[in-house]
Amino acid sequence: MGIRDFLSDLNEDRKKAQRKLKDEFLGFTSSASRKLIPRELRPALPFLSAAVPFIVPGAGIFSGPFGRALLSSGTNLLAQGLADPEAEDLNLLSAGLAGLTGALSSPELSDSMRAGIDTGTTAREAGIMSQAGRTAVEPSIGFMQGAENIGREGIASMSDFVTGTGETFQKFGRDPGALFDAGVKGARFPGVKELGTAIALPAAQATGDLAYTEAQKALRAFNDFEAEEMARAGADMEAIASARRSAIREAMEVSGFEEDEIMETLGELGLKQGGIVSLAEGGMLDFGGKEMDLRKGGFVPIGKKEKADDVPARLSKNEFVMTADAVRAAGGGSVNKGAQRMYDLMNNLEARA
Image (cartoon, rainbow, N blue to C red):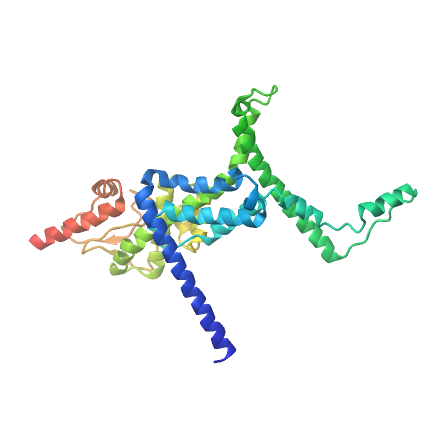
């Protein structure tokens, strides 16, 4: 066996072990979520996870950046699994960002970074020259040392920002009344503004995680049902991909997510390109010159919006089309469940014809 074959087998073993670990982890979180966590509370889990770096005291094993990074990444992955008991995958990018935030929240990181900055002249040397009445000569440092200094100061500054956010939470936690102090003239309730600024950092992480979860749910629903129906209706892969993006977009819009959050989530799922701009700007969907063939019945999960009449479809005499509101009502508020019930009704009635 050559070195290439050995490395290939080693990489394959790694992938298998990683898949097994992921499946076991998601199996555990799925079971725990279904048994212990009410459906209504699951959307709050990403926000609780994002708050961990700011509320866990910086002491003991959680004082250093490594320990806090592991804690933040671990709670992020746990929240992902518990928030979506049907999840088939994990957002490792989110877990990595959570770990970075956790590392930056270490109270030790800022000082340790700045301690390593080399300016070329020590404090002792500068003191000796000052006592001797000599002007210190501007020290010369190499390019690499200068780059390292900039990097260290950048990390230290980011750590100061993150730890400052945690200190803000602790301050108002100790003295909630300070949150509603009137403040000076022209600056009403500065505490509220300060807390709002602090909340923005964990809220951004949590909102992104929640958006990803909702998008994954919509993607699974589409793949389990609509994609097969579109393929049977004669739609090509490009049309199916556009419909997949549209289904995710609709689900996220219903959940109240903004355009930038939707586009960012589509990018994380690898579905950002193609179809979205044309749908957002209106116009008919392009099926490569084809229409959706619904002469044998079919569900239409695509289009700019409901009642826009922008989906080209082919029907036959005596066929009947249900409105989107009727489909949604049949599913108790879910268009996917409503479509399935419509299909079941159609099949039952056809069997009696």
